[in-house]
Amino acid sequence: MDDLKIDSRICIQAMSHGEGFHAQGLRGTDEQMDPFLMADHYRMSQPTFGPHPHAGFSAVTYMFDDAQTGFDNRDSLGDQSHIAPGDVHWTVAGKGVVHDEVPSVRGQVAHGLQLFVNLAAKDKHREPAAIHVKREQMPVIAQAGGARVKLGFGHYDDGVVRHDPVVNLPTDASLLDITLAAQARFQYPVARDLNAMLYVVSGSVKVQGEALSAGQAVHFSREGGMLHVVASESAHVVMLYGKPLNEPVVRHGPFAMTNPADIARAIQDYQAGRMGHLQEAE
Image (cartoon, rainbow, N blue to C red; front, side, top):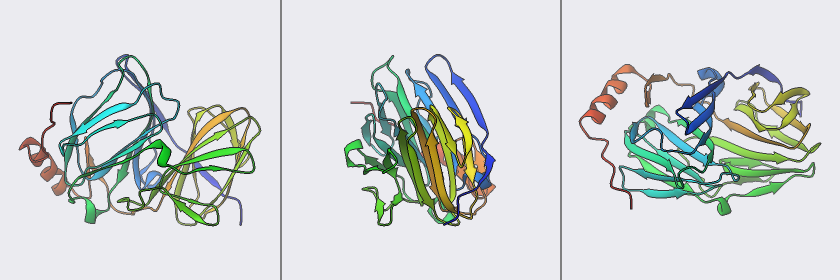
């Protein structure tokens, strides 16, 4: 297999909301990100956003293992979930849902990724759903080069393809959470026609021979090939990849549809209360 090629850097946008929320946002083009719409590497220690709606995509919270605390999540479906360190929670918004996430222990840092994963046009008006996977359910793979790989969701191809416990996710998307000791190596065959990107959470690495440090991200060619990552020092990186939907994306705030008419419908549904309301937290 030929080596995977880096075709571009992904724009990183620093964001803050008060003292309790800081993030690095991956803001690539639609072509780079598809089927992801957005990815934020966040640190959150106080309630920040309040109850808010989503429609047309899945809002995915992946909590890193090193988080001091998790999130308490509740939504208008009646779901109340504790997203502990290492867990992942999918809010499959479909035609519309209202949810809220707050740190379980105020003042402690919830550290992870917030991902918006697009839904195909045929699924944008589906009934919303909540999917929760605990840390201990996720496969962990030790590579010969010294890398530890945790399959956050999706699939991992090591000759015998492994899936996370939830194999019926609404979108073909995967997350690999990779930790490396100094000089450790990670190799992974990326299939042709997938959109794949790598983000450095901490430390520094060389990716296909190119030096990357914390807060930087690259996008790879859709031709596929073998990925090579070497840690210059102990490092934590995340790889995201999926099958592009190749559909139009029209955004308006917390909604993502394929045309303006569906955006207008989502706004009307939210204003009319048809996306539901949150129950009081238990």
